[in-house]
Length: 174
Image (cartoon, rainbow, N blue to C red; front, side):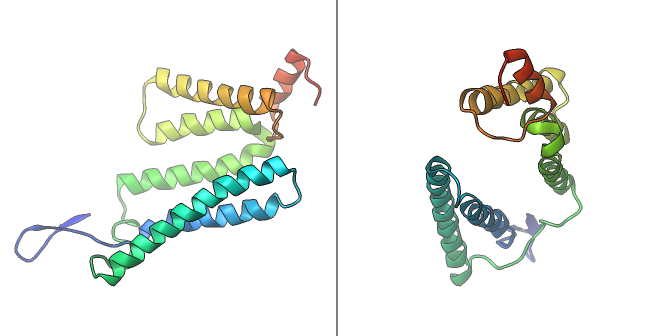
């Protein structure tokens, strides 16, 4: 966030505390995934290990970059405008609530319907108001996930009303 300095020139806020939130959450999620897939088939472990290694490597590189900017004095630890009351932060909070709701609702909604609602509502929160992209993107993305991950690959993602109806219509045994 830019602010006016003493001489009237614009100064950039160089707070980097907010830059650490997503990498720390990604590391936590990766470590949780490593732990939760320890007893699964080698495919789940190897895929998770590959993706997790990339996430951990990128997070470590980002941490090194942040530490370097702190040590050289080009930034300070802090959150800047991250917690300010403004439209962007309200949207971020809305997206966070939707993400939590998606995870909490998975057992009842299932993957396909839950993803459709998450995408639809996320676009609404971020300002999309045209019905074609709202419905089109949400529908196509959730159906692609269903066809590729659930129908073709047989992934054991949480089923819901859509998956149960599709299985019945397609004659798939659960």
